[in-house]
Length: 497
Ligand code: BG6
Image 1: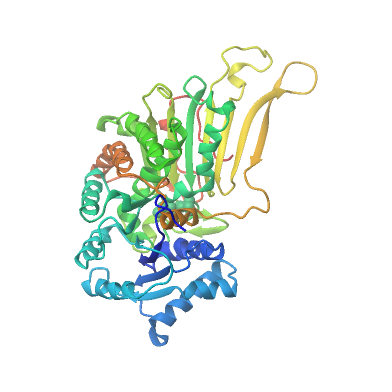
Image 2 (image 1 turned 60 degrees about the vertical axis):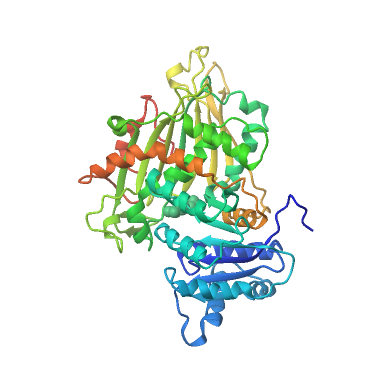
């Protein structure tokens, strides 16, 4: 069934942190959807590690009931598929820091399996602070042996700065080969994000314009209505820069800016992404304020109701200056992009959920249409909307009907999705890649390292300025002061597609 080029599928998929946020919201629903699509290998068993005891009904039965309940809340599971799915599970109650958890895991993994398979996937759906303990325990129990076989999936943020990222990487490499490591950034699994590659490289029309001669600037926005929920423990130490910008937004930026890879293969694609990251102009400490802006939400109104400010969220320090909004400006000093600013911004508790890449083109050099002077002529835009809508918009000029030579903006809107196309969650695509051993959409360490190199000076500077942070009311688009990053006087944030 599998030739030598196609790695064998795993026999076991271990989720560390199975009762946590990520597993509950993303991993379990995505695994179920793969089951429904018939994409989980037949003999695959799922092992859920968690600290939670399920009481009287016992852990195994309690865990299964828990999975059924959460899937019934989120999806409409087919009874037969659901039964097949939960039958794959073992629940392993235990602490991540205790050796006994891993001894018992070893016993579970040793049970005979069905089907043709070879390896184990270890998914670390846990706080970054627990990564090291798990990796060391896996080694102590010999669960990483034979070397080179199993797969380990690590969630972002990978480290909290360049130094800690290197330390974590060294630790991983002590026990695993690079081919076994899957560093996940789920934005790479989003269909619209992958579509960016098709849009750029399959359309002659687009690629010719995609450079400094025609593009004025690029804006990348990931706005969220949600606050930090019950994640204060993690978020208050991370902040928007580490949680979103250093990974998701910078990945989007590399896809917008990279050169076409020679092939759509893991290393070819990642080589091109790294070239972009390496070409980003370093931000000297003295220029941090001209390149980066941070702020924090205060109480405000979202969707008709009042929500508390960040400092009043459960688990957040009352005087915390952790940023929940960040905006940054980067320049990519290469032949294609020199001089074109890339503006990135992301925030929690913003006015609406909106993720998009907006490309603003330059004004035409010549003023032919006297009744619409150049300064009034709206520039052309291409907007790629990632969520909630998955679509592409183009804004062009056309003659205003009637006498005279006036122009008006024509909006061309195209949705990628046909009404009956099933939406795919990013995790479905990426979990399937892990199972199939395809690393194309996973992050190589040099990408992580170069991205940290870019944002590290900003974080270091902020770490010293701990007595003030700008504020914005929940439900707004963030503070107006973020506009200070713009080079052009006629530049403003685009808050819709
Ligand atoms: C995660 C961040 O990586 O991405 C969260 O840790 C954020 O803070 C989430 O809410 C956003 O993902 P999506 O797919 O909902 O845009």
